[in-house]
Length: 181
View 1 (spheres, rainbow, N blue to C red):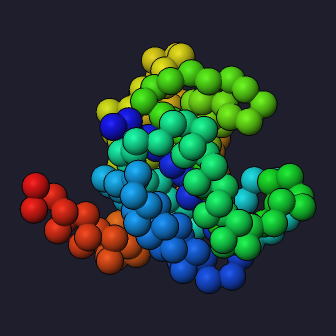
View 2: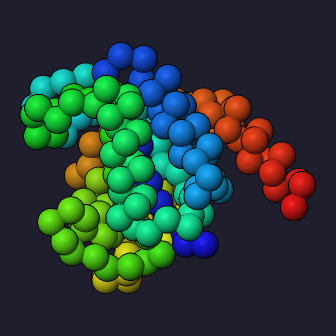
View 3: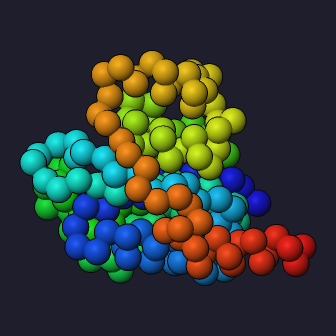
């Protein structure tokens, strides 16, 4: 099994519903097991004027390839009525593959680690919740060092729900699975 980190975001409609649904779709896929879910963060948008985002991160184990996981994430976005009309525009659901076993991949379809991972507090805050030991596979920069580097100039983020509150059903399922092993 491989380990992967996926960033989640939503700023249209029932944002928590879209995020919960994405977690459920990941966790119910036969080749994916959600290991950890971050708290939920509210963050200002990057890009054109639009509503605030709710962001989270999940750590998973999977037997899918990086490209297979990318296709699964894109399918979840399509099921959530994601429309790609404006670059960095508003969206019902966004799933970004942030890291896959520390691999470095640079193709037109997939870049790993995600290019913006160490520059965005809305990624680093949730990432620190689920993988505080993570290090950038190219630079070696830790999550805590990246947060320290950008905090003075970064956009404000606020925790709006702890992991076991916004994603209670999934957390219960994960805890149940672990207790059965």
